[in-house]
Structure formats: structure tokens, C-alpha cells
Image 1: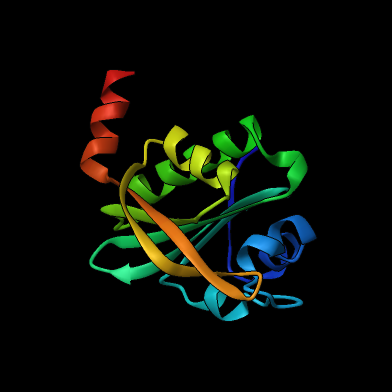
Image 2 (image 1 turned 30 degrees about the horizontal axis):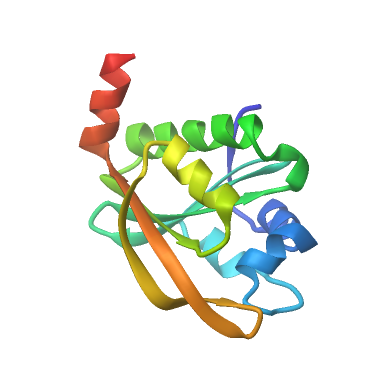
Length: 154
């Protein structure tokens, strides 16, 4: 599978609104619409047919990553796709650092972040809306300089 950059939210919305995904990203909403995110050219929506990552621009080369994968794409497929998206961001954009928040209990997202080389930075209490309350989130990050070193060692 090869990622493609999307300039509309069709695929992202389709995946984010799947019940197994929405429960982690929807903050209790019945549905999401990421159209505004996708049409902002500062952001990157990098997807396959079964998932991907959107990178929300924070400025100064910092992007916040949000992974979205259908249940059948989790595991090795999600890992390959996410690694491909990280390579895209560091080699084809102004990205210098990727950050990502993982809500407490989302073990798949935490495992994916770690497998992709992101390192734990800190835990933020009451940071993620889930099931009508705020739960902690753990923040992870990777810098381009660390990614380069890792790539040179392969």
C-alpha cells in the first residue's frame, strides 16, 4: 500500500467515522467532518484505502500526527503506512518534529507511536475527551534529526 496526499476529507471522514475509530477520536460526537482540516494546505492528510495519518500544522516545522485505521488495517499494515507517512513528512515537507497525543487506554495507538520511533515526553491529565469525561493523554514525539540517524543505521 502506498499513501497518497488527500486534499479533501472524504477518505479521512469515512475512516474516522467507523465506530471502532470514532470512539477514540469523536469526543462523544455522533460523527466527524474533517473538511476544514483537509482543505487547509498547511496540513497533510496521508491515507490509503484503509487508513493513514493526518498531520496538523502547528508552525515552525511542528506537526501533530493523528492516526486513523480501520480495524482490519491495524498491526503491520498500519505500521508500514505510518512509517511511510513519517518518511513523507520528513523528506518532502518542512517538518522538523512530529508530536502525537495518545489517550489513556488506546493501546494500539501507543504501540504504533513507539514502533515508529516516537519517544514518550510527558503525560497530561484531563487532556482527552472520552465517554463524556476528560482522561489523561500521553504525548510522544520524534525529531527529524533523530529520524535521520535511525535511517542511516539501517
